[in-house]
Image (cartoon, rainbow, N blue to C red):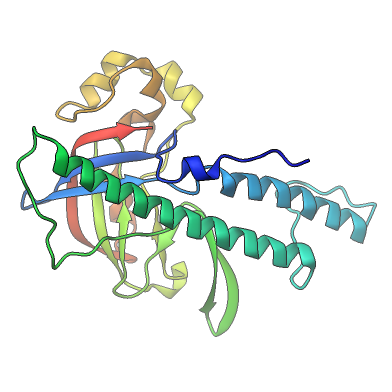
Length: 259
């Protein structure tokens, strides 16, 4: 019997690791609420299951082939392939709904906080909501393909996206340039320079406190793996993709909540 999952209870929750909720100020001191969360586990489990199925399918094609985890694939037109596409599509819808619920709850909490001044959401604004680490059917160079964006988001011509930095750095709201050479994509964020294990060995709580000055956030040993020094310089990352996006807003966090 399959083990029951907890997806219903996870809906609208943050998760751990690099997932976050932030309150930021832009270049005109307007307040932004930004969050990063995903499918809360189902996406990872779907990947794990279908990687094993892909390995088994490859072995059926050629029993002499030693199938490496990263080389196995599902053949289009097979049941496993169709089931995988269905499952991934479900996980991506779940992730988007999860973020929508979280943002509604964040705004509700902020409105009810007696320590914050009353505010209204700008009626002319709209939420920027974008996937990363996902697959989608798109047309590129005249062919319809399954495109996977790993550590990347869509950056089609005129499309708004989010490129977050680390806990102590800036984040960016961007507008895509639709560069065909990148398959209309840009980076999802700064990206790590080292593993979580290495970061915990290299940096101290004092280092983390210094790096997150001016930001209300956790400043304890359990978040050292998320300290800003464990990530690339976001300004360098943005400079390297100036041909992919235009910067619309620069956001500086004043509050960062880690899962």
